[in-house]
Amino acid sequence: MNKHMKAIAIGLVTGWLAVSSVACAPAGPAGPTLAKELHVYNWSEYIDPQIYADFEKEFSVHVVEDTFASNEELLAKLQAGATGYDVIVPSDYMVKIMIEQGLLAKLNHENVPNIKNIDPKFADPPYDPGLVHCVPYQWGTTGIGYNTEAFEEPPDSWAYLFDPEVASLYAGKFTMLNDSREGIGAALKYLGYSLNSTDEAQLMEARDLLIRQKPWVYAYDSEQYEDLLSADEIVMGHGWSGDFFMAAVEDERIWYAIPREGATIWADNLCIPKTAPNKYTAEVFINYLLRPEVGAKISNFTWYASPNAAATEFIDPEILEDPAIYPPAEVMERLEWIEDVGEATPLYERIWTEIKAAGP
Ligand code: SPD
Image 1 (cartoon, protein in one colour):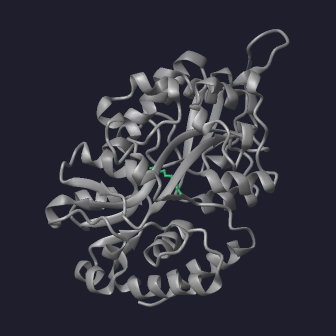
Image 2 (cartoon, protein in one colour; image 1 turned 180 degrees about the horizontal axis):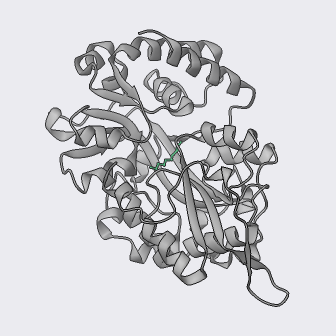
């Protein structure tokens, strides 16, 4: 458990769905009511815990957070009938899938007036035009975090993870994200293909590459790779930009590179499941997160970029000026969004299962 996890003072429990708590406190004679508890299902270490405490103090709503490690895990949980979550945080392509499957409620924008703070660049995404269902939360890239002392040059190519002559030099010293779209996507990018390829031959090539790589992989992990870097268990990891920068605050040997062949750009979003017990309270919470100072507090903790334009003036200049967090135009051109691959989705999942099941 790292410093950020230790700092979580309130509400971080797992397995809470067994205990239902939906008592409501009236806010006015006939108006909507605030619940006493709000259940957030989030990525790990993705919010300053002080924000939950501040929200609780101002609104008397206790926030309970449970965490997931991939979009597919989040989807499976909802599909399996989990009904207790009020706010969830899926990425772009998963928002589209969830809308199509009827899993998301529509936002009542009257309850989320701070939505006006969202940068126009993020206000009409193709996966949720007009922000009808969700509000963008944070955005970032997927690349390679590394220990600067272990490399003469930054490992700014997927070859460090996939070229047998290079990757084998780091056998047992690197991790890959435990994430089907990101893992297969990285292999596709190394091969020069789109990370949204639906071409079966290209996908088989990516599968074979990942299976060949497997003996050198320390672990498939999406939640602790930055701690493994700090602990010198590994020297590089496939992972999400902010997680490495957050670790770099305490370990200045850690840095991050966006592979030159191109990489993933993504945005995670605050959404309300259709089954949420406390929709109004969820909207009040989302509106709170969209305040300029709160939006900045999120990025100042996570080291991810913010889609909240009004938050910019409160974000640490060190974050705003870092080209690996807010990449310049020439790098942005090489980035690709993960998209819903539709009928090819089962093939991606089958390939990922084959990779995970392959020996050794
Ligand atoms: N520790 C928080 C990491 C959040 C990463 N979400 C990105 C998903 C991109 N597919």
